Length: 423
Image 1: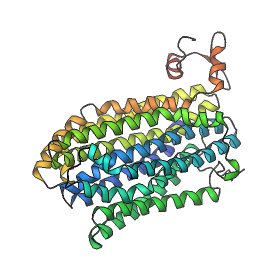
Image 2: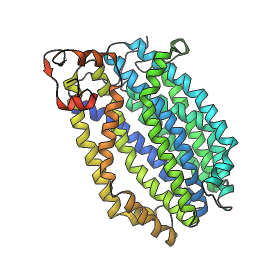
Image 3: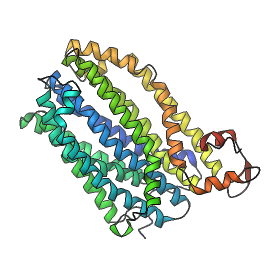
């Protein structure tokens, strides 16, 4: 088995400190991801409304690819944390290795399918004759790196599931710094335009996967990722995929909604596409830190559930919901108040600014509920679907054993595990 030098002990009894130590690097990591998108948009925006509109129309395609990686990653993280909590590191290693093995061919197949039909997709999305060639230039360079993106996403989930959120954070930071350095060089100095932005992103993805490969080959984490641990047993694959399938479906539906949104905006001109793209990016910037906090906390939830410490799970849940709701409400209010200066970071066009400001305000009116949505989603994903759950709740009188004293069935636990009728 690999080196057991885990950065953070998932069984630490000081829950607020443990959650913050896990969640803060995850929040920083995904916030860096958001800043990377922000930086790309600022550089591309200086090339004109057509350029940022073209890049925005590529975003739904990237979201679809990322959704698949997220689905595999969510299922894998739940699988790993629950088995680590149960003390079964071998099974956790098999799950991680199998997930990464499945992600590579899936990424290749999806990339080929998108590249073959790329022009038709952009036409359906409503790309105008001025936007279409720019969008094709950007996407044809960016999409070949989709497999690397999928592997990076799944690798990040694996590292965070075992408590190594700091490594994931430093990997994202490295990719961000590299992208920030290469963007102006490729876009302006070499005169590559949007192709330069895509190339800078592609190189940063290569750097990130190189760091994850070093992390796994040197066995710096708890789980062992290697070919010898790959197991294509149907029941294991089912556990990895079914838990993450709702996350993938939700993200794909969001991508489709984005496609319809851009298609509707395209009827009114390039400025409307650019404005909607800016509003979506600002919304994403606020969502990622909340998602990062939930992802960082997921390891503790899954570990506690695997160890059958249900009191611990409930304490984590209460702390999570208070933080996520506070973050989402605060960001919603901030964007509504400061919408105009935020939009001006992306575009100097007066028309684009006016449309984007109105779009931002509408998009963020109900963003305060995003914290609750993220919390509930993370809870359900972390608990997964385990045999232990069924056995516990089939017992007469339903009692949850914490390892010290049994406690009676709580309404919150009933709701979380969906066993109200049995209770």
